[in-house]
Image 1: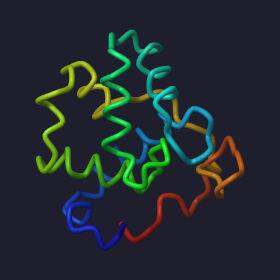
Image 2 (image 1 turned 180 degrees about the vertical axis):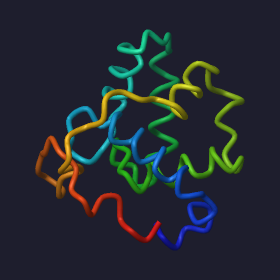
Image 3 (image 1 turned 90 degrees about the vertical axis):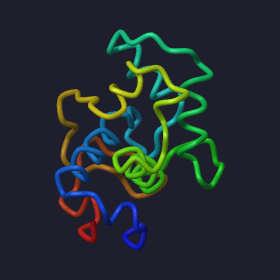
Image 4 (image 1 turned 180 degrees about the horizontal axis):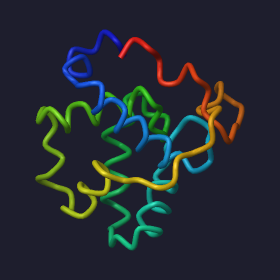
Length: 132
């Protein structure tokens, strides 16, 4: 992802904001966001949504079509939203767009995200990768 030209256009504070949002959406702390996790976060924030809207967001993020959005997939998608190269706004409810861009809950614990297949409740100091 470090070679992604759109991600490279982001300021460090934008990368941090996107990373923080990813960590908050990843309720299960497995390094991926599912439609179910995103819906859970929307419900907790009292934001109305249609299942199809959330499914479409995840589908747009999910570059390898495994049904989940990895950190890299999320970063690439959100970088395009931040830089205006992905027009998320024309088909998605404004409250959901705002939520995606500014979602914040209390910070997760410190060794997160885990290696694939493992679960942690804390974030390691080497996450996100330093090449952003």
